[in-house]
Length: 151
Image 1 (cartoon, rainbow, N blue to C red):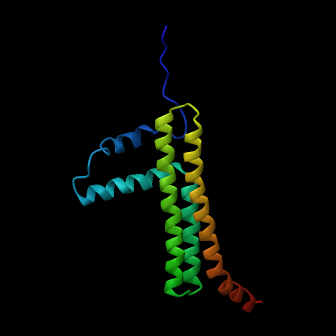
Image 2 (cartoon, one colour; image 1 turned 180 degrees about the horizontal axis):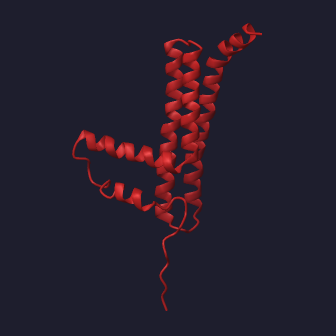
Image 3 (tube, helix red, strand yellow; image 1 turned 90 degrees about the vertical axis):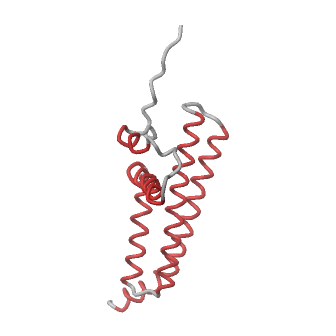
């Protein structure tokens, strides 16, 4: 006697709308515009489905806005932008790796799948900690000066 297993209803299971948008994404992009469209689809998917991606966008935008408000030098703003961008890029890679691992192991547990997911998450964590360190080094001195001068 065989039985059919229904698709998993996990947070990683793609909603119908996303499935429709991604139908042809396996094909080679016919032009640069289509390549950007696929890239934007990945960013949009991560924004819609990954809480940490939204948090990283918010914190990065806040750090850049604060650096502009504090009149940091262009190079300092660029460094904050680069570190924030690295965190976002690694978060996208983390999402891609998690999706690929989930596709590969389905609903089973595998030690190597856990290692892949944990290492990808660790890469995001390290980049986020470095971004906080860089932002702290660049933002705290002028912020302290601003606060103490207004007391």
